[in-house]
Structures are given as C-alpha cells and as structure tokens.
Amino acid sequence: EVQLLESGGGLVQPGGSLRLSCTASGFTFSSYVLYWVRQAPGKGLEWVSAITDSGGRTYHADSVKGRFTISRDNSKNTLYLEMNSLRAEDTAVYYCARGVGLDYCDYWGQGTLVTVSS
Amino acid sequence: QSVLTQPPSVSAAPGQKVTISCSGSSSNIGNNYVSWYQQVPGTAPKLLIYDNNKRPSGTPDRFSGSKSGTSATLGITGLQTGDEADYYCGAWDNSVSAGVFGGGTKLTVL
Image (cartoon, rainbow over all chains, first blue to last red; front, side):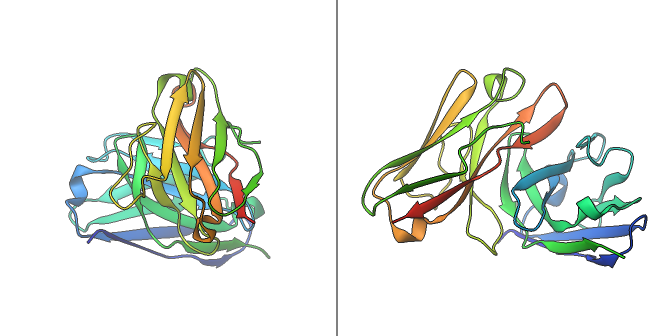
C-alpha cells in the first residue's frame, strides 16, 4: 500500500524558516517524480514544487521561487521542502504527492499545516 | 487568479448528470494531459481522472473526462449525495515549467 506521511509543519514567524519532510512507503521511491502542493485555508489547490526521480531536476512555482527548495533522499525514502523567508501568504496545508511523470499525482499524503504568523 | 478556469460551483439533483469545465491555454491544456481530482472538505485530494479521460481503478465509470483544444470537461452521471465535494483540474504548463490547477468547483447534490 502506497503511503505518504508529511511532518514538520507548525507555527513560524514571518521571515522564518521551516523544513517539511515526507516519508514514503509501499513503492519504489527512487522511480517516481514527487510533488509538494499546498492549500491555504478555505482556498483551492496550489502547485508548489516538483522533483524528478533522481533529483536531477527541480521545478518551483513563481510564488516560492528563490525561497523554497525541494529535495529528496532516495536512500531514506524521504522528500523535503526547505522553506525560507516565510510570509503570511504561505500559511497552508502542505501535501506531498507521488507523480506519474509531470502529468498527474496518483497518491497524496494527509498534509501538514504551516502557519506563518507573529 | 488560477491559470486554469473552472466555475466556482455547480449543482444538480440526485440521479442527474453534471459537467464541470476547465479552460486553459495552448501552454497547458492545449499541449499536455489534463487530470481531475476530488476533494471532500477536510481530506486530501484524490485522483479521479488522468491523461484527459482515463480512470484509475477505484473511480466509478459514472465519472468521465474529455478534452478539446484548450478546454477539458469532467462529467458525472447518476449523481449521488456522496459525490458532493470540490473538484479540481490540473495540467503541466510549458511556459512556466510548473504544474497548474483550476480554482476548484464545488459540487452540490440537491
């Protein structure tokens, strides 16, 4: 059974940093593209970042480019999202998802809440 | 403002049919596959349709997808109260090298 478990969310002050993790099981981790997608309270889904199976290529939304970095450790079956210079508008539930190429996400985690507030 | 445009809400009676549109451009829907996701409030999104019109195992055949040019449509027949959820379309966008979603459509089964 494919499982994705996010962790690392919490309350952080504006300008602060946070690192999210997503631990995967039930599939060959190193064979899949992985994504971060977020959802602000009461809002729709927003694509954040993606990373190829080897980690050789990464993609980020313009809204987080230069502040967020996606990475992965295939030896630990873990996906990361390093978030710096956080803003109030980054407040959201952050989901990790397994990708089939860059086409779609077939499995999603339950999400971790990040709140940016003073 | 989402890159892909969806109606904010649709509604229909149980047993009826509803369609949800998703409009984009040549840089996303026009040249890439479209996927659809169902999200019951308070839960994670779930893949409903991929590659424009394919259903993963577990998606009932009451759900269908289609694409024409720079627009896509999700169709749901035989509506059930359990279909009440938010529905999102998604695609890759070549111009920004990033994924994009629609703003979401809330389905109400009256």
